[in-house]
Image 1: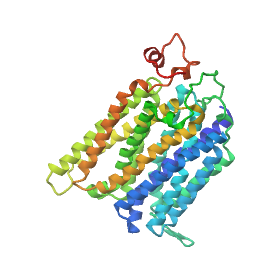
Image 2: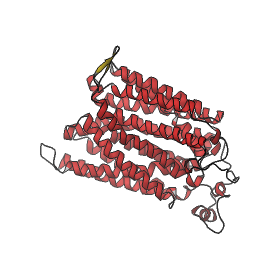
Image 3: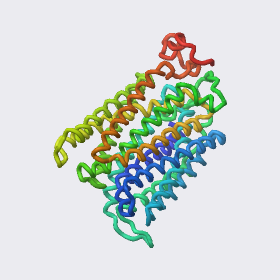
Image 4: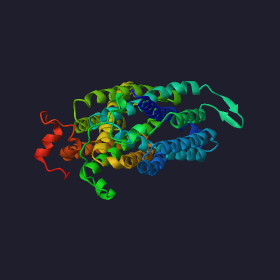
Length: 455
């Protein structure tokens, strides 16, 4: 493997790992942190949503700059610096508004993910892109898996650092300052754009040979026309709805476990530990299946799995609200809810990965960083509204409403994917140099059946 490609893999992989670690370190403790600062469940939703809102604004900007400069390095470093500042504000704390401000600043930094995803879209072969994105996102989930282990250490800290108190509430912010400083130094001294400015190469396969020239699809240079095509609108909707239901459940998880099981920070970290293991299993299976099944098949599978998971959630909450009349939490709730969470977590990976991959294949390669910024913006919008909607719904009589809405959204996703299924395939002319006439593919079949789009 070329040394520069190895370093690129290392920097990108570390970035996604640290994103997951940040989420796993902060989420289990932030509710208790805000409670100690007089923040209620509604304010918790605002804080969680603020991170996503800031990323929604910044992601397309990072992408636009990356596309114009032909380099992701400056954008990523700038984003990391904002992550450092935001997490330092979180560490300082002192008031719930300082914590809110810290998450806003860190969220502005997190938008630089669009620069990395745009770079990945341009620097990998189309046939390998799904597995490459799966590997990156699996590293993020590995960070989620390892994060609770960091918490087990951080919970034991209780000392002062100059004027600042380092304890179980503030230490995650200090820890992430150190983590993002390390990642920034990696990008400054190790990262080079040399392998990301030309034709696609197999970055995560360890080879950097040039591909044969390929015919380019005449994607519209008009952004409105580009993003209003049926298949692109569908993928943006999938990004929004899947993020809405996922982050809503995640934000409601700590108040929900407190209500049902009287669990606190460390117990919630163990939940994330188990969830991270399920996600890694799911990403691994997607990586394998992506070599045998098309992106649209995997996407449909994911939407169906989510629908099953949320149907189980509806049944649980309606039973607890309208049928079960005991005062204590029933013994069966923990294993049944755990099974439901397993289905959710396993299914969401089957939605996220093919959605990202298809979006990169169905939009112009020349503006991939900006395109991914738009997709991330749709995702972040779901991440904003999900926690705002879900956290106030964690009461006995409101949870069935929340579960019913999530199930309805899952059914909408299934219906939309089925309705636009024939369009969810890369334009055949984009792959013309890689398609063998002796081995017809799903794309070549569609070309003979449908006049998809002029090439």
